[in-house]
Length: 255
Image (cartoon, rainbow, N blue to C red; front, side):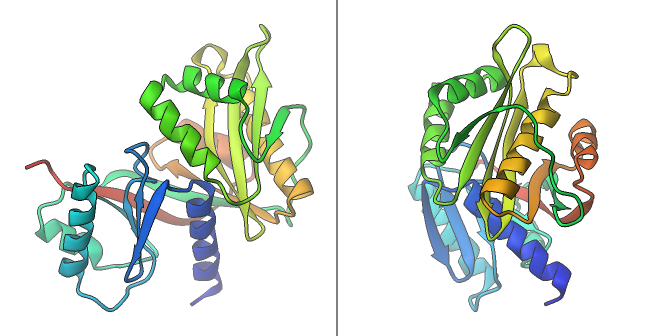
């Protein structure tokens, strides 16, 4: 394994630990995650190592497990694992790749994060943060319930940052979770009425600074949809200048 492969796998661990599942099953090197259907990342199969069993048998096991849970089988396919999986899913009639995403990286040893003024909550989000997140994203009651449970399941150090708009409302949010000296940034959102004011930049910077100063993080990673040019431009401006790997989702068509 090369140094770049090792770094990508560390980021993948941070990615998975920073957005946990409510239930999970390990099967022959694959991680099957189930979380009431809230987000594909926490309700999909992630291959982590090749294992020893045949791909068809492993896929069939996953399909049966998700069917029993009342969830559609979805595979999250990283570029760093199981190079034959896409071809196997093609042969089984799975839909094409959804939302190719890239995991990008910033090394704090090259440039430490600066401090910015923000409201921070450690370990768990407060009610005001959760309410603002639901307002900014438009999540309904079911998604809010699942998200609360996922965040309650965090087992690594975490911080929840909020920036207020001029009218006093919480207008931009981000959270980060630290694993193996790397903070994974998630749930970056800004109220539509407060966009293009630099609030998201401040929220993410606050997360990075907390992770570096309070939790010993030496680097940061975050997943972003590859086609989301404005978000990528924001993160590039924040020092996320290295792409480590990509992933996409494959979904079984309904019968």
